[in-house]
Image (cartoon, rainbow, N blue to C red; front, side):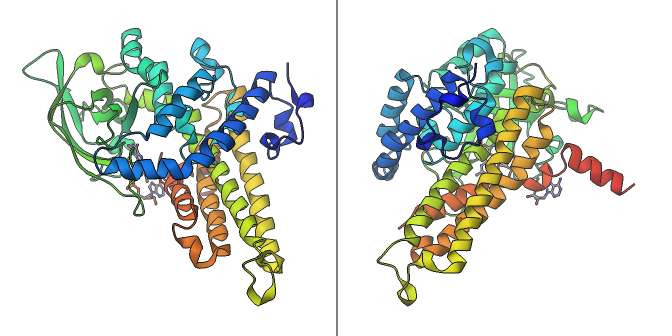
Length: 432
Ligand SMILES: Cc1cc2nc3c(=O)[nH]c(=O)nc-3n(C[C@H](O)[C@H](O)[C@H](O)COP(=O)(O)OP(=O)(O)OC[C@H]3O[C@@H](n4cnc5c(N)ncnc54)[C@H](O)[C@@H]3O)c2cc1C
């Protein structure tokens, strides 16, 4: 049963959802989208200055989730707003939304950078939970997945390395091998870049991708994924990385060194040499959650641009900034581009729902290539309307721009995504 006709067209939660999507929403989804909208507008956005102040205060002693976010997580859980991202295909674990329906929720969540975290729908935990739900045995699920689903801990994904081109994961060179002194243990040696920061007090474990059989003639069978608890001896964080100057506390991004770090063999996910099977399976909704939320971030930037365009205190040549033709055209360009990018994301989500994740590969790549780059451009246009203030902490625009810019690289650079499916096949045919 769909609820398209029962949607209140004046409710702001549905203002940017195309009609073809509205008509596919279940009554439950309509209700959830409204709840997510009210949650973000009433609980998250007004709390932004407090959360910022708590992060700065906490950083002086310990990196940890700000108290207000922890409280909001408890509240969101009670209100049934937790783990909305797990698609219906995950059975009893899923709250029952399709990817298309979740995309409408995530878009709204994106209006506040950390709102997704209050609903346990943040990266990289969403991708990690999908992975653990799909590939872990029952024991492992109890130990590693359940605490994440309960919101009791956070996790990190550790694949990238500083010394190889990691966008081609067959290059990954950090080693995970049988411990010669203990048949039940593995030993890890190597360097890693990125993966959330160890300083975060609530972070529990890393999902590590490492090379276990460099001599295997099949390059897709050389790697293994293994769970590494944060406090494993021999596993050291060298420093926190800043992204365009932001430390992104308390989640952060670390640079790591493994020196004879030992973990039990029972922490291997799926089996030795099977990392690429898992990585293929990770090509799911988690790949485009950032894109979904970037739409919301850009929507917020657009709202800020409208405010500046109509600010009576700011009148160059005696006119509102929004009264200049160039700015009317600029705003129209932002509005229309943003709506068309939303179409790209919703199409990918729907393709995954009706054809499966594998068939959605091209549509996912299309999101990864188009959305971050264009959202960064659109946010840049909004910054321009704010003049000098737009580049300072007087507005959240620089942080929003940084988010869009980093998604061009995180989860694989856009250039690599251009090699997906139909795009690379067409280019290959043209070249032959
Ligand atoms: C904010 C942020 C968070 C991140 N979080 C994580 C994380 O949690 N875990 C993790 O493991 N990694 C994380 N990453 C790392 C990210 O996934 C990698 O940086 C990315 O996959 C690229 O790998 P690389 O840096 O080794 O670049 P390389 O593979 O060396 O590529 C460098 C450049 O070469 C070009 N290039 C690469 N492939 C192609 C191609 N096929 N065709 C044409 N040109 C190409 C592109 O311009 C590319 O940007 C994060 C990155 C950022 C910015």
